[in-house]
Length: 496
Image (tube, rainbow, N blue to C red; front, side):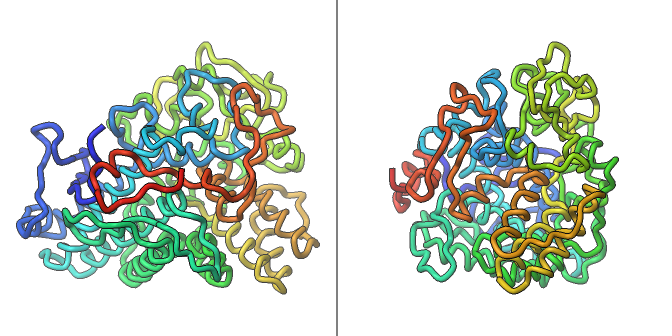
């Protein structure tokens, strides 16, 4: 492993991943005043390459590891740490030690290394854009669009990380535990960790600035770019994690404006097309951007011909599956029998009870390329409904928001008459079913201070190893990678 330096300067360009100290044909940068004179920041036309490079970085391979395909690794990590995604077997071993709650508590593991490196690389690139874009030649709308996206990316990256490496945020609490080093400009300075509270304050500031810059910007060219809706969606996610439910409901409602829920036919089409009307933000991949065995679809699809999928098709928690109405289109995403030949498998692949076909590699078993969903309107309906229900006295409003989503998935669904905790429980079940496999479950367990409980399900103890984890305790915090502690003398490890 290379050392992780918080000051490492990285440039992601649209066609390549460029890192200081890598191959000689890669662009090298230095943290001095000359950075602003680089061609990349002379004009907004060139600067677009930098922001497009961050988009591209979400699905490139890191550290020559098959399990490190950008944001898809985080998504898979977050779900295998939960109880709703079940490994049918050990397969070829990828993600098993994460599934067993080992990797995130090992400071030498590739998982903690990646989750730290990946997001700080995005932060470093965002910092360079934010520091230089105002002096670029070009239209003001381009500057605002580029800067707003960089601010949103920095906020998103810090939010993704603080939920892993910090203690859970408690509304009304001091939140004074160690969070992350707040690196907000290109620098080589070794920066100590700020508090959880300070990190969240910076996230909110960045999102506020991003929303201001992105408001009124002309329509984006595709859903890989962050627009004001996506920034509002980030703000809703952050408020939900902070238990600021009034703010979460407000921004979730604003975020979903202009987006329609997908049809039932689209729900069964494989979750692989960013042109889906419900997708607010997604990674768009084209055929010449080969992803081999490290992409999201190399692990989560039903049909790509990888060793992992052939031997370990991903399954849903059987108890969760049994809560789904028979008339709900989402019930058709999983096969409880393991014998339904309508479910595609790769050549030589195995079938298992409760296996999934939610994600389908669009080119079939020979290619792992596919668009990856990063934010959907359905999530915003669920955030709004949950946030309303948790405020108290707004059960009717929460039930109405939930109804809009639920009846779209299940034409036989009737307006919920539940109130209080029963309504919240119903909303959370809808959330677990709807967002299965999209990278939310560990985050949800931690923000709600819920235990992990795989008991009584189809999870195999010989594979899962850890079947239950009580709330609280150090185990809910990722350890910092050892390389960071070696590189940054001002950094401190989380409790072991």
